[in-house]
Image (tube, rainbow, N blue to C red; front, side, top):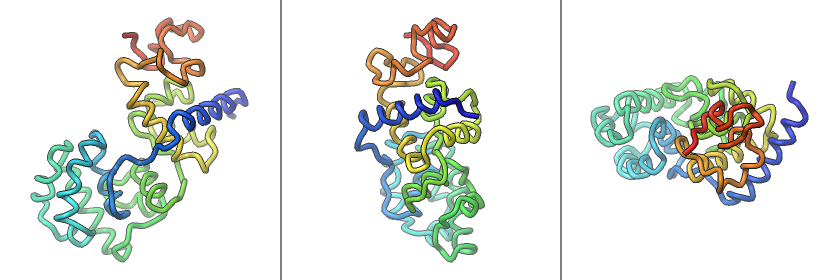
Length: 230
């Protein structure tokens, strides 16, 4: 059972994040739902900035599911090489597009269950596609920033993204699930960085049990929550 105090703190965090990042939106560039799916697959272990450098040429050469499905995988690999893990990503993208054609009439499916049948599509990618492609909040997107900050903020004790998502879904109202993720990602990039978080410049610091110097939680430096003092 979720404690009322924890839910109240989560709601205050949600309000603060809205004030800090009122215009936050998905930073991936795309022109269709399929392109959003492909870009999200590419973003695994890669920055959105790098993905956005790669996708213009990729989408010009492979503009739709048929082009990806019937295209030369080596050419796809060459175009996405700089995103890392390019062989697996090319295999997943091509496999997903082939399944979209054979099983879904060439259209990206719009349910979680169907999206999860596509190669390379786990809950993170499915949540992004549903929220930004179809306007459906069916889950909370958990990327590396959301994972790190959710632990530092004391909203979960898990490292498994699925368990983190489950905890966050209990704390955050469903209409705000994707807004929460996007704004937390912005905060993770700008302030609460992995190695040296800027606790002094953080608008959430008074609500954060993982902040550097917090002795209330018995750590003295926030290390229990993945925060290392500078």
